[in-house]
Image (cartoon, rainbow, N blue to C red; front, side, top):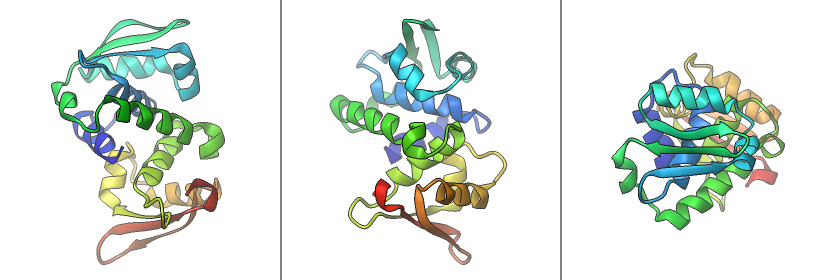
Length: 187
């Protein structure tokens, strides 16, 4: 999961919205070997994003070409970046990761309906050790990978704490790293 989030941060424009990143995450994890992805209407509803606007952003970034939708039946697109074919794990593992991201980023789990905060919740959960529930990452990397254009990292971490995703966090001034502990229900 962390590889895909980093990949998206590199290939998508910095100003792409969190809605578009959440859709791109599902597309990258659910694509077939021909780089086509089909998302059901149920998956699109579960994402709780403006799918039409997100598709348009990803088309403008030349990351995908819409084949059908998004509409009442769902969405189909061809992904345009062949480096996705080199991503691991294998397709069944990516599908499990997509399901995990969908469940972890849903408003009930993330404690918020705001797409940016849901993307940040997925990020910290994906970068946390399952046994210790602790994680660490560079401030700049979190800002880049989570589509945070305004550098509001402290505010975002406070909001993740207030919504019950994080139990605690701190920024280490010397290294520029952020360390955190997930709240018990997310560990």
